Length: 418
Image (tube, rainbow, N blue to C red):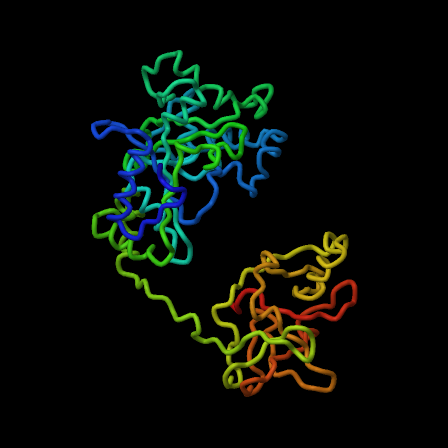
């Protein structure tokens, strides 16, 4: 039995683990079929797009017929864009096409090609995160979900009616009475028909979720679902190895756009700036208020202070903020930018506070040594700043006071000046 976490540091090691996965799943050397693989550039759960938080999860789907609306709108508008298209009544063919072009569905993409999945795992990762490749035994999955160890292509010509009947509950007729509540619980594995070139070039196959969001949880699927981890510091090297082996954007996406992306990746530099480059400050206990920002080297006048800082900003209307109480409310009093329309500019999540959110106002009677561009909310040195000095600025120059009237602890920038 393979251990729960397997690490691959290069392509050769990855293929060794793939062979071990096949043994673990009880595949024989001469088996024509094998495991399925799914590459992800982050170690995320195996949730289909339609069940992810941005679409409201299962509860919203059941309440609002959201999936049926999306399916209907896609089929109604897709004809003009399709070079080839499924038959008008081929619900499965349309559903597979939706998935391949990024529409939200209950499908998850898998491939029969292990190296293809490895490429998908590293292609969208600049080397900042662990990537993963999931390995699935689809036949064992269907044995548990369907009572048969077959994988059925539901939209293929000539599929036996009894086989089609087995999988049809997972794709009910749109706006059918009962809605999502009528779905089976477990996920199933299905083969698509190759109605788009990408489906063929990527050797695509799919799992289709039922009602259970965690239907492909590795703890529930011991023995038929395994994970191969790619350390973040090996991601770029593995992508180069795959490129040398002829697996790149043009292989995965056989069109002009794929070719162009392949050329971009081949010729762009993989080098990153050093983490300390253009870093002038650090956090320390402040004699003014709690934690403050202090210079760690000489900063010349007009120097941009936080190059490389995360610039994401989420704007929240004042109404919901007014209803928040306690320590959580103090986060909104202390940190965000507040504009004249009383909108609160916050980090996307308060766990993502960076250096610039901790700037303090100067002591009474002292002058600030930092100024803010009121259009772009970028921070600059107002004068030369010595090592060890605390950086301070006047909030009132670019932010309103919170409703509670509490003096703000700190403030930060919004998007860069255009």
